[in-house]
Structure formats: C-alpha cells, structure tokens
Image 1 (cartoon, rainbow, N blue to C red):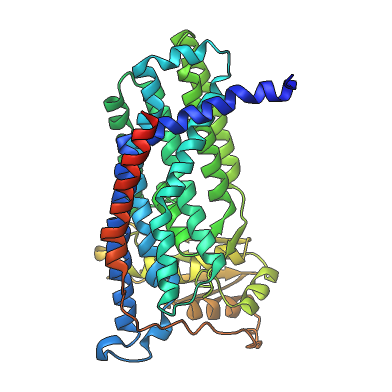
Image 2 (tube, rainbow, N blue to C red):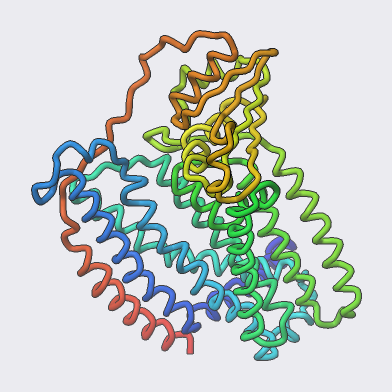
Amino acid sequence: MRSPSRRRRAPYAWLLAKEWRELAVARSWWVLLAAMGPLVGMSFISSVRTYAEVSGLGGTSGGVGEALAPLIGVWAPTFSACELAAVFLLPFVAIRVVAGDRQSGALKLELQRGMPAFARISAKAMVLLAGWLLAMLPPASALLLWKSYGGTLYPPELMALMTGHVLNAGLTIALAAAMASLAEHPSTAAILTLSVTVGTWIVDFFAAIHGGLWERAASYIPSAMVWQFQHGLVQLDTVLIAIVLIAAGLAFAAVWMRLGVAVKRRAYESIALACLAAALVFGSSLVNVSWDFSESRDNSFPEADEELLRKLPPLRIEAHLAQEDPRRLEIERRAFSKLRRAMHNVEIRYVSNTSIGLMEESRPHYAEIWYQAQGRKTMSRVTTAEGVLEAIYDVEGVAAPSDTSEIVFRGHPLAAPPKGAATMFYILWPGAVLVSALIVRRRFR
C-alpha cells in the first residue's frame, strides 16, 4: 500500500509528465530550438572574429586585445541571442502550453481533480523552464568551442551571465502564462504579451528623455537587468524584484485559471495580488547589496579605493548635465554607478533645463560637477573614474590610497578564427533538432 506522501505526489508527477508531453509535441518549442542554433552562431562567429582582429589576427595592431575581456567581447553578444529568443519566440511556446488546455477542454478535467491552481501553473512553469534550459545548449556549446580555440573561461562571470538569462526567461514565462490565462484565445494572449514588452521599451525611451523616476523604473526592466548580468554585475534588488514579478505573474495566471470562480472575485483577487506585488517590489528596491563577478572588475573601483570610500562621511554630488549628453552617460557608467555600490551615503543629483543640453552649453555652470562634503565644496568637469575619485578625496580632505598591490586585469587576447562554428550552429544543431523532433513527436502521438 502506498504511503500518504506518495499518494499526494502522484497527481503532481502525473501533471508534470503530461505537461512535458504537451511541450514535446509543440511545434513552437521545436522552432525555438532550431532557431537558437543560427541565432547563436551569427552572434558567436561575429564576436569571435572581431575579438581575434582586435587581438592581432590578420595583421592588425598586436597588443590591443589586452584591453578586451571575453565577457564583454564574446559572451555578452553571444548570449544576446537568448535575450532575442526570450522576447520573440519563448512567449509563443509558453502561451501554447498554458492556453492549450483551455482550447482542448483538458483544463476542465484537471479542475475536477481538486489540485490547487498554483500547483497546476507551477508544473507548467517548471516544464517551460526545463525547455528553455535545453534551448540554451547552443550558447553553452559555444563555451566548448571557445575553449578549443585556446580561450580562457572565468566561471563566476559566466554563471552570473547565465543566471540573468534564466531570470529573463522566467519573467517571459510568467508574463505569457498570465496573459494566456486571462485571454480567451492564444492570439489575444500573444498580442497582450507583446504589448507589455513594448511597454517596457517605452519606459526605457522615457527614461532616456526625462530621467528621474522614469530612469529609476527603467533600471528594472528586463533589458536593463540582462545588461547588468552580461557585465558580471549581480544586484540583489534586481534579483528580488525579478523573483517577485515571476511569482506574481504565475499567481495571476493561477487566479484566472479557475474557470468556475466568478469573474468579479477573480478581479478582486488580482487587484489584491497587484498591490502585494507592488509593495514587495518597492521594498526590494531599497536593498543596496551587489556583487561584481566580472574577472576585470569592470563594475567596481579598485579595492583600496572602495575600502576608503566606505569610511568617508556623507557626500553630495550635483552634476549639471542633460539627460542625453554623452558626458553624462560616460560619468554614470564609468564612475557614478560604481560610486553608488561602494558608498551607501552618497547622493547624486543631475541638474538640467533640457534633455539634450545643446541650448545650455552657453550657460556658465553647464557641465560643472559639484562635490560637497563636511561643509566644503569643489568643482570639476572631469568625467573619468580617476577624475571623480580625485575630486572626492579633495573635498573629503583625505589622501588617495597608496596601496597598489591589487592585480591589474590585462585581458585575454586570442587571435583565433571561429573554426567549426558555422558547421555546428548552421548545420549540425538544426539537423539534430529536426531528427529529434521527428522521433519525439512520433513517440508521443
């Protein structure tokens, strides 16, 4: 006789097996798998060729490649194929799996088993995530190719990179599941999912023009999140917000999967869920913990400078730079983003009357960066990391650290062409997917 725990697990195990069969016979999933090969191949081959040329291949200037890191030069563009697939291909797979039961009538039979709605949607999400991990095999195989060329791999930054794309896929699955449960037809769910995706691009657009709260909100959209992970930066607030949104999307889908519950009740539950998710997102945004897993420490100041910055009194910075001024982008990327991570008691404020700054160039104080601490003020126009640190130490009245024992990252130049990559990604992978699709679909039918 089976134990009670085994009897409780049996329906869920049956549901997982059923969802896996549904995924295995879905044409959209096999299209996703087949498309990943050429998408990854184009990105990998192009990035490796560029990396090799900068490293001295074909008579180019030797030694320049020492300034390159494989994470930025090869892996960020290679894995960008995953971001593209997650936006334009994965939603159709998720909608097919979630909405298929409603279209076939299987959902009504599942509802009669008394299994919680969140358990049903979690099974679908787990199967979809497993399907996405299989779709990530092409970029993972690129790691083996790179190693065969003589390239180096730094596991921490690669794990951060992959984690970012898995979270991004989780967001896509949760969004598509929510829309598929809400809409009556898969095509409507696809339009709603695409509308939300375009909406995040609009937020990014407004952030580039208006800044302020728009800029803060844009830092948590999927593309910004992926950018952080692609540079080896893991911020706890971003991870927590992604997890909250994934859980909220799946919970929303579970609410609307209960066909026998009144629409009014499901609407009230959805509003309560949205309020709870908003509160959790706001609380998560206040967390200021991050880790730089990049081998080059491209997201951080030197360790000696960071140690000194943590001990300094509160600092206030006022930068007179417009939103679209290239100097603002440079100082934000090279200095201020690093400063916020290293110094928690810093306040950075941008001041401008326009978004482009062209009409402000003639004003006497435009492009000035004012530093204020302990009643002292100093001004600088330098936008490099070194110039910002020098101004901070000047206004704080401290000497720059003299410890120079930190190992400087010299890069990993590799002047090797992408041999065998075209054959693997353009021929072998699509062929293997096609053969597997024929075998698996015939077995499950």
